[in-house]
Length: 190
Image 1 (cartoon, rainbow, N blue to C red):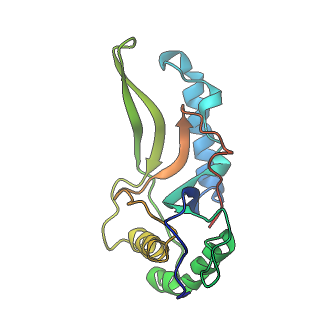
Image 2: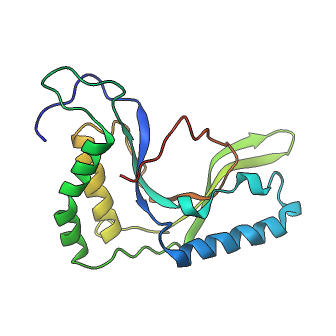
């Protein structure tokens, strides 16, 4: 993987994420939390079932990658789903070493909102995204070390052009009132 990429960074198009939806225990708790919120929806302005994310989409976002729309010129390698998967697979041994052969465990002990905006008509703040995640992830925690490894390798190889937040979130957590068009940003389990 030492050939350079062609042209400027590609427009962000896919999420690089660790799947969480495979954990049935987490999915069931998310579903129950959503059910309880909806049961009390009269107390929360704008809350209805259409803004909730499906628990089968739960993931921890590492970064947003940009893949090439068109084949690059001769001598350059493309940024494709396949090449991204190859890069991720090449990190397997290093990830296993970080985890010392154990499963990655993450405490989901923080709930917060992002993308706040002030509403004059509501006389307060409106929130667009409710998320959960770990309250603290220290620099030597296995989750941070794995995320840093994956993020840095993908950034060094030209897949990621953005700078990521220092926080770790469980994205697609509970609700998103912005209703992102799923055709605009596709998700690949990379």
